[in-house]
Amino acid sequence: MQRVITAVQSLTKKLDQWYARQLADLDVTSGDWAVVTSLAKAGEPLTPSQLADLTMVAPSSMTHRLDKLAGRGLIERTPDSENRTRTYVSLTADGWELFSLAIRGSSVVETDVLQDLSDTERGELARMLEVVIARLDDVEA
Image (cartoon, rainbow, N blue to C red; front, side, top):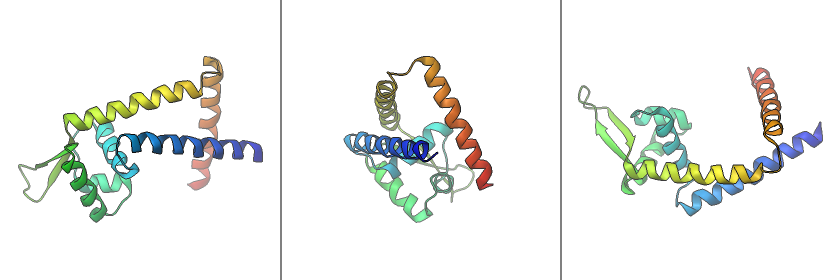
């Protein structure tokens, strides 16, 4: 059992390090990336409060992140036409390009990391990890 946990922890650490380097190459922090991916996954504009909830940060921290991302031209803020106190945030074309670059880069590495496994082995590994994750979710509930 300990061997499995140690292997998963080692894999997680190595992947985290690789992803951190990839984001650094794109001049993006993990916090910025959380905002970009949240917007991309939502597929529609979100409020700063929604983004703060999704990324589990304080609203003041989200404001700082959004200011930084807007300054780089990666997001835009649009006032709500029905509620002047509400603002919506969406990715710009440059934000979508950054998202695409990062996803393409991670796909290449993930494919390379798993190249020694057959498709069947990859599927089985994914299935087994999903079982463990589901069990952990049950324990947390």
